[in-house]
Image (cartoon, rainbow, N blue to C red; front, side, top):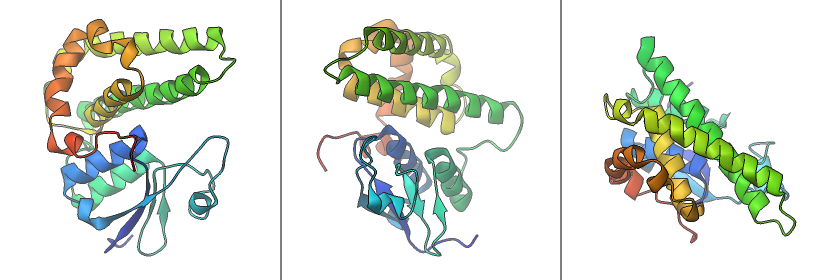
Length: 208
């Protein structure tokens, strides 16, 4: 697949999955290669503009200059990493599986958080579902709290990027949860991650 001179990214300033892609683009020096197209992907309102490129009507979706379309976020991140010959996806061994496992945990928790937010905002929200989402969220935070010291070792990889984006989404949409009090070691790990230029430049926003 040839390297594109320009890439179109279906983008939103609110999506943690889009943020993951943008953090990687910043870390890899590829931001200037992306043309961001503001795209709204609502669960109950399929977006025909997105669906011309991605029948799932989901973001992020990346369109290369030759018309090739890539989705979802992990595929796009790995493509950008390959394009830049970057370090975010360890090639083999324990580091590879550790990064991918951490990515899967944080990415899966993001799925739960989005479902939780959608349910929470319903006028007839199910208390059973809300309790289940909270239970799973706190269990994931407990697991990451136990790995906080290990997370500080080694270079930044896709697992750490995704955990950082997930914690940023908790700040953005679930401030009342008080995750820092629940997971103080994880909060200490997150502080320098959140201060990185790539995270500062991609902080979620209700504007845009």
